[in-house]
Image (cartoon, rainbow, N blue to C red; front, side, top):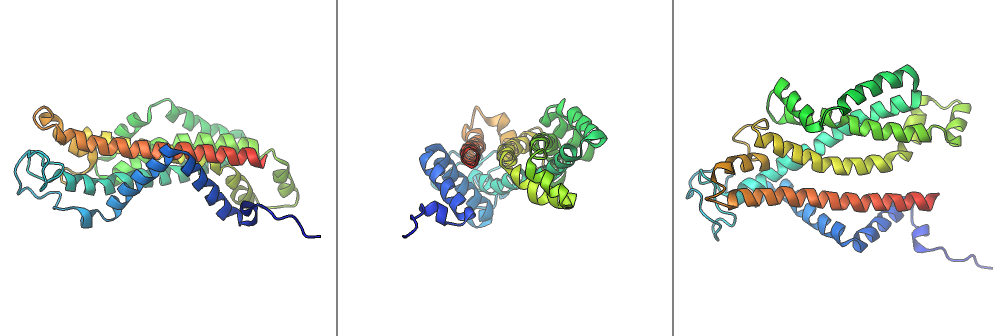
Length: 295
């Protein structure tokens, strides 16, 4: 007697089945699909920025504060620089800062959370008291303080925002580890003598990834806003480096005379952050559904 045919998703390898389920979530969630499309355009602008930019972003040979036209679709700024070119080139910096800061914060924060949650005791007390101290201050205030101490510049901005986000990842990771380490398969691994490093890497961390991924997605948008805010305050990158926050800062004095100077970079920030948040919401729903199904 022939065995009953399995559904197609159950015949696929787990990774391919997971991607197919996630694509299904994106297709059902129109906001997430639109966010993925918009974010893909910004990523393409970041990767191919110099090729897509119609002019040099620092070229000052054009008419000053010219309104949007066929020659300059987004107009020019107070120094005659093409605004579209500056926004396109600024996309690379903003996305690079957002992704790199989250990667650094994720590695440091998850590492601290794993160690604190798994070992407990005095190690947990020391780590979590530092996390509690950092948690008492807003992330942006911490970033401003670190930039004031170490100075401005792209590298210092990345380090400052990364350290400001460490506590968020540490708390999420620790809360998951406290639950996972009590599971029977962790006790069985300890019984048979599996090294602690292998237990953390192969058993604890993979089962704690769902909330960490969601936290990382949300943190990217916060990091982009953080970089834009620091640049707007003059605490970001050098003045000759076009970033969205710096473009907005330059537009402050002329917003009543040239509306396009503030509208278009503000729209770029808003669309990027909204797109990432929409994708993060869909990813959270997808991971929650998978967790429920696994239970």
